[in-house]
Image (cartoon, rainbow over all chains, first blue to last red; front, side, top):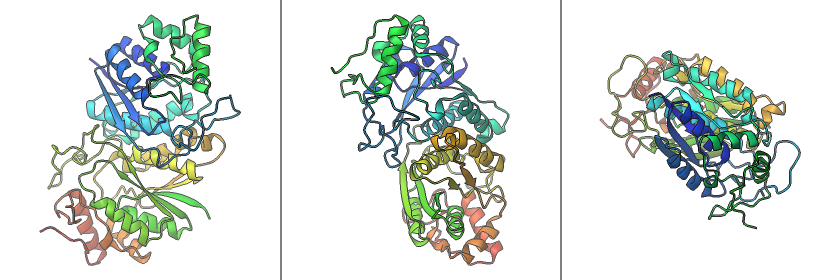
Length: 223
Length: 223
């Protein structure tokens, strides 16, 4: 059976991506990151999602991004915006997807996988540079020169199956594949019980997605 | 003053690279990684080197590569080879320089630096794929699409000033810039006092380098 590494944050997009990779016939090694984000509710969500979607394994890699900082998600003194902003918002974590894919690439080499899945989307998103097709292509090129497996003739492929999908479309696709979105958490500042703020960018995209998909929103809100 | 991020492992190559970046007029933010390597003596060495070469700052980022494994440097059950081997040796850490440069890139964005320095060399080395010019070029391309700074028109430059230099040449260049190699540690399995095994690949390249450079070897060996 072919193996894939799937980045799993515990949100809608990565849960759907895992379900898609599974449906494509991959045995999926899920990987999450404890990087000093504002809450660990998303790591609990990732664990539940990995289990219920039948991931072959689930690892949580610890990684100290707080000592780099520079984002509302990794520095306590930068507030998460509660209204939409112009340009790339302060929730952007510098080079985050580059770091996460690099670690996924290392794991892929170790377990012999050549396929990486990441749930980025360039529709209904916050404009993060590392969610665009150009980024995915550049990373794939890098992967093939950066690694022993690449040098020895293996070809890495970075799959971003959601990249051209809107949130509603993603939700409909995931529902068809059996994803239980009640298990997922999107909020940038969920509380320890996993309840969402309802006002951050990520909550807004999520809520609009359920509305447009005509699917009841299973999110637990604080207010 | 222009800022640069310099990857600093505590060995000959990264110490020399830091001295070169300094000589080029950069204020240098040094970055090291506590990634579960076999010994922390190299982190102590990095700290000493950063201080004596006048780095503007020195950060140690914690990062759990043990849960990925796949290398003699990150898995206790894989022995460090004590004789030269064919091909890429088991001391290769999957995607290590990709991960390290990604984290350096994140820091560069945060502090406003656009120059990264890495002390890789494709001469007198172990054949690691992520020490070659093709890797450096691919990472530079990635950096410029992966980041907010890149999207906004900044250009990242990845400097690998040693890439075509042999170990003896590196040592002579570093001596001319005032590097004290007695502070550096190269051994893959140094003990807690920082004493070298004398037999691993890294010790071999180091010893041959001092011999060829006609410079007394300041390394403290266990035997």
